[in-house]
Length: 127
Image 1: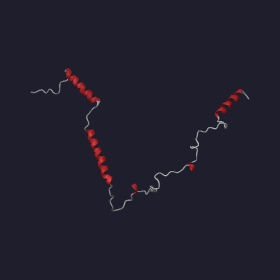
Image 2 (image 1 turned 60 degrees about the vertical axis):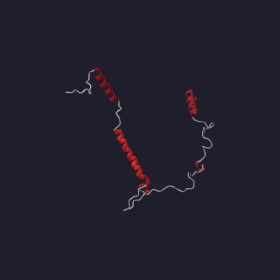
Image 3 (image 1 turned 180 degrees about the vertical axis):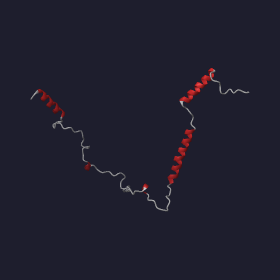
Image 4 (image 1 turned 135 degrees about the vertical axis):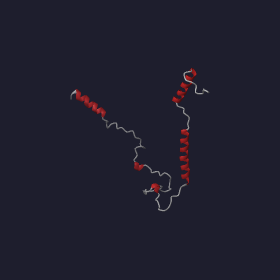
């Protein structure tokens, strides 16, 4: 066997895992089968809480001629959500202008008035 083939065969043999040292990283608890794992029911013996799908919105079938009765939380939620949305809109509309551009414009106007380049808008000429 030529030295080139021998070094290539040695390199391939080092890349393959050998059966003498099998690689196992699992502990005995992690290696157990799913069929051996105990089933734990959450909530105990209160029965099944699954409602099969009916195809109706929120599982309520509409009945002709009968108006849906409101639940206790609905009006509170409507007034609370839309009322706070309205208050937030009003607060946003009347918030003070704190942008850097507005401050810089006012500061430049004050400095130009102080140097006499711009006339003071408070000085009104009386005739």
